[in-house]
Image 1 (cartoon, rainbow, N blue to C red):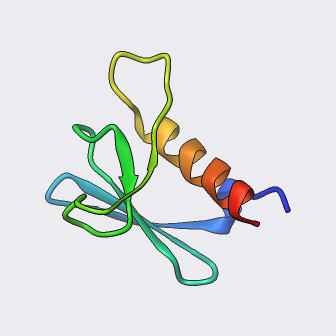
Image 2: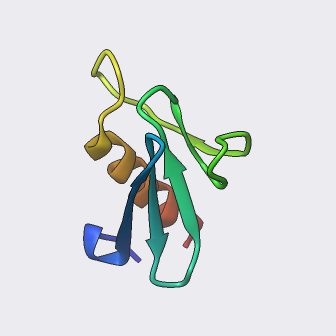
Amino acid sequence: MKHSLGDLVYQGERAGVHNWNTLAGTSFYWHPDWLHIAEDMTGMRPAVTINTDNPKPTQQDAEQTILKHLDEQS
């Protein structure tokens, strides 16, 4: 199944950490200083590394990484 941005619910940003939930209830977190998507707000449990051509990952890079990760798991 190919996932789209409509499958993610952006919960906003708190203390610099952005949070998305899937419709199934899984949470993903990202901070602009992190090179990964995390499963917890502290960033200590990386779920997947962000691959980008940008010097620093962007919010769009984070969203695309989450979607790719979800596609690979389904």
